[in-house]
Amino acid sequence: MLDTTKEFLKSTYDIDQHILALCQQAEDDIKHTFIKIDNIRSYNQYNVIAAMQREGVGERHFAATSGYGYDDQGRDALERIYARIFGAEDAIVRAQIASGTHAISLCFYGLLRPGDVLLSISGRPYDTLQEVIGISGNSRGSLREWGIDYKEVELSEDGLFDKIGIKKAIELYTPKVIAIQRSRGYQWRQSIDVNAIGNIIQFIRGLGCDAAIVVDNCYGEFTELIEPTQVGADIAAGSLIKNPGGGIAPTGGYIVGKKDMVECIAYSLTAPGIGKEVGSYAGGYRNFYQGLFLAPHIVGEALKGAILASRIFELSGYSVFPASHHHRTDIIQSIRFEDPEKLKAFCRGIQKAGAVDSFVTPEPWDMPGYEHQVIMAAGTFVQGSSIELSADGPMRPPYIGHLQGGLTYDHVKLGIMLALKEMDMAK
Ligand SMILES: *Cc1c(COP(=O)(O)O)cnc(C)c1O
Image 1 (tube, rainbow, N blue to C red):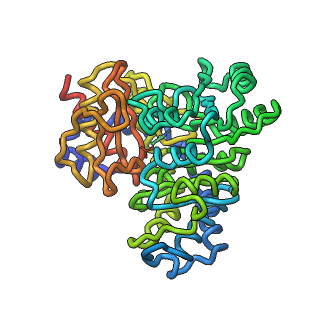
Image 2: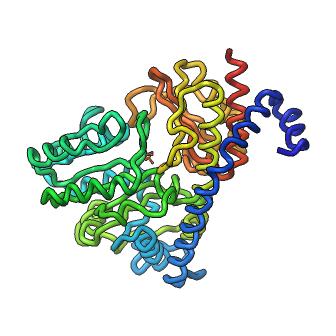
């Protein structure tokens, strides 16, 4: 950091010398890990550009559309581009998909019928999906209410797939859909990298099981060279206000995968027989294209920020996941605070670093879809966007805070410094 920068941070934010020194030390320790991130970013950047070139993207694709949206060129080309990038046969990329939960939920409702079994092989799914499945909440409208049974196989202690358990569950329940969550969500475990997903799919196919394999790809996009649909997953889905929207997409979700399955899912999104043929967007598609173009770079910034956070909290004596030197397949950094006040102070600091809403004080609240109170910090341009710098954590022991996103590395760095300052003050 330049002395000018240090002086600025001291005079503007009253950031103490020991925090600046800690930050410097952490950066020195992690600099070498950035090369790998840069290499992945480069490949993904060129892959995205090439996909757009092959579809002949031009100004006309950005146009606003209205009504049914028949032959909406911007929408259709964007979907073909997603399919190309993810090595998939087809894609649904829509502003009408309200969130990641909505995207994944559509996959389940599109592919499962009464009497079928959904099997999760990466343990308990993300909080909001538990209500979709019907294992938490009042189960109204859930898969369970529709007569779809749910089974799960825990990951092993070291965060790997439990092959014996999976084989047993497949033989016992003949699942119609097998769900895999790539990222950890709110769990304290290793995220599952794409190679591991590929290996387990081979194992499952080796058992003669032809269930549809659906990957919750939230937070994973562009963190590696390949995506789950390139190693045998039938479907992958996620949110556009996370990685693939590049911080620019204003809303939306995507689903990529096998053509016939994507069609079934599109029937749940709109109506049977109509599927992908309708859906206009009066806001125009420019931001979805530009966001996708920026996404590999933005994901790289977020990853570097996550590694910095990991190292700084390691140096400060906290237990973190993943460790700063660890291989990453998502953008989440978890820190175990063991103390509700520290978790709150951490979130306050992240909030104070926002270019937007820096004056807001985050408080724990009952967020829809979550069982415990959750505290969230997000000073974002797009509401709730977690590819932008954000932090959250359920208010339950051991008070783990999750940091993710950051459109620029410097912003993440400021967030961490202000978080440390708030935590100092809370002592
Ligand atoms: C964010 C997330 C979801 C849900 O996405 P929302 O947009 O918050 O509904 C599902 N699974 C994982 C792993 C996530 O990180």
